[in-house]
Length: 259
Length: 298
Image (spheres, each protein chain N blue to C red):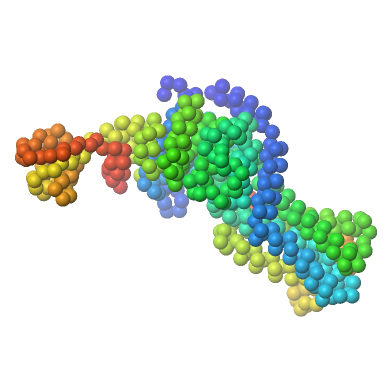
């Protein structure tokens, strides 16, 4: 018994978990890149939408390019977050991969952090492409800190969106998860004013917009680029923080039960 | 029994219910260093549930499960085990070498990639993507992941399903090597020859209870019956009425008999038919014992 207790202590002190976190994140990113059906639309759609609606169809309308650059930056991080968590977690949970890694034992948190990092990296890549297009083709000119702040919003936006995705992934079965995510992802983008200003949609839809986390992110994005918004920065951050915490809390309970 | 520090995994009166189904009902199991325990039983008997409790993936409703005297869900316990689960879909997009590197990073003192690859027979597959491998190759990769951490106990849930003969014998060889080094193994399998070839002890589960346990020889002895085959003209229907008879059936000019006391039956067969030919007597294998035991339990 003594020998066992001793070797337990030794092995736990000898173990360094950092390499596991790094590899977990690296391979999560590689896995996603090697799934073109996920990576290509996720990376391509926001820039394509921006090209079409922000630059071509609204040619000469600098206001549209300005507005859509900010909101598509938020839209960009939504897909890798919602699908990366909602669909991938559902599949890996249902197919036993998550159980095997837990048993293996992956350090706690490495799984979710790796996926969060992947979503943030995708969000950053999409933001860089959008920013280059906005600058070169849309005539968008911002102060350095504004470029930076919008980048922070689009990368940080991964947090509430991943939390929402995780709630789906921790409960939905693998075959239903993509449909559920799409049912949230596309309508919520529209209803949050990410595709067009809410002044252009029916009034009651605009009124319920504060229900959606994407609306709060969109307002923060518009705020960083100096455009008119509703609500203050503190309120939006508080709302998003609380939303993320509640989602993580629910997902944790569901995930623990499913193991 | 003599030295309790040898016991690495214990189920103590463990019960687990899923809705209306009593998946496990008061099961006691002990696994010792350097021993192979085979869990046998029909589908739904509770084998996978028993393993889930020992891995800490499920908590028992009653009773307890422990690894190295610790709760199985603790990291300190899990860093000393390895597992090959029956239903674990490894992501297709990762290469075999990457998967092994990832699993090595979970453990304080992993084996080298070269050792793991050689022991699991995946040297030639390291650069290939998992999704592009055959079923048997994928199974070998899963075994590689299970042994990555120099586990003190390995849980192998149907490890050789889908393997060809060569791959299976490589795996058996590796398992024997690990056991000689002191690793304990819990094995579930549908291939009874696998249990016969590897196991020190066998526990037969049926409807969530252990209905028999002991060494392979003890389990086999529980079923005294032997199988007798011969070419004879004696009527199978008449033979079936002899004492200690389990069954007698004619198949062409051959009669196949299952009986408890083979010697008496053979003596009587020879008395009745002087022309009797090609007499064969077979001891029941684990397969027959297993069918018999689970039938009794049902």
